[in-house]
Image (cartoon, rainbow, N blue to C red; front, side, top):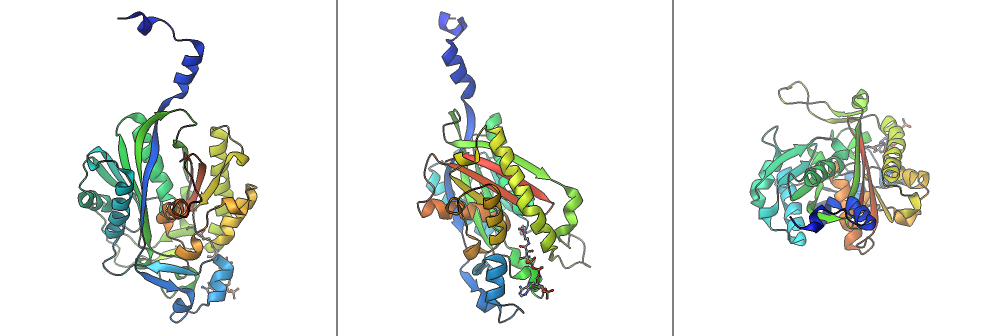
Length: 340
Ligand code: UT7
């Protein structure tokens, strides 16, 4: 044994070492949107609604709706393939595929396993059910697996086909949602808090609020059609407060102020909710990424789709601090802080 191995390190080095740890770095991203773009005016031909109402109450202009071949697995695979290609991570390094979805193709096997097969990766794959918070929950799981050393890299996907579970006679819900998928690749890296990586995730649920947003169907329940049911006003009431709380929790855990944040990417459900969170947090409007106007609410896919849009158009740059905030059925809510 040499002397260096047993003598205590200088104080500075000890502090640096204690801050350096394995974390998950976001090294690739990809998206898939269905080919069928439907504007509010087009929707108003079959639903008792109007472009003016939808824009004013939600900020939504259009949504993409899946064709029959655009299944959850199909869209998730396309997004994941793009994410893997952009990451440069070899498929052999992927230890897990985690797919956040409320609209899997089958009760089982998990749609994630279909994606795993299509990607040709090993490890393990599973679906994550946390509705619109699903992507942040999946990010939290992958981050924990990487931090613990269980895996070295993961594909994390949010993919949804809500068009299949909407009641197209209920104008209060069917105009709000869209289909699509977004994926990221996470890889283990060593660094301190100024290095790129996921700095924290905070996940919450309160099952007492399960009845304000749910699907009235389940495997084996032939009496229930399996449609999305929402008490919009109640969900709205919780959305701003819970997402803001989770975001503040992330800032406190990382000893950061709101002014340290470069970008906020909230779940894209309603422009009024997004503006409400930005205002509550005192952020400038230009720091908040908004894609609900073009994608509508794509549930677990909304955050990775928004993240990709803001990287692609050059707004989000390497080194910047990005806060994610989500809320969905369950009720579930969550935040994640990422240095890109
Ligand atoms: O992703 C999971 C999280 N989800 C959310 O965060 C959604 C949260 N909730 C919301 O975004 C809003 O509550 C909605 C967009 C769903 C609804 O907005 P609202 O301002 O709360 O409207 P409302 O439900 O109170 O309805 C107001 C009026 C009603 O008419 P009356 O009773 O005042 O005559 C509705 O019948 O608007 C009517 N309405 C519509 N009119 C035209 C409801 N939907 C429509 C529609 N087109 N599509």
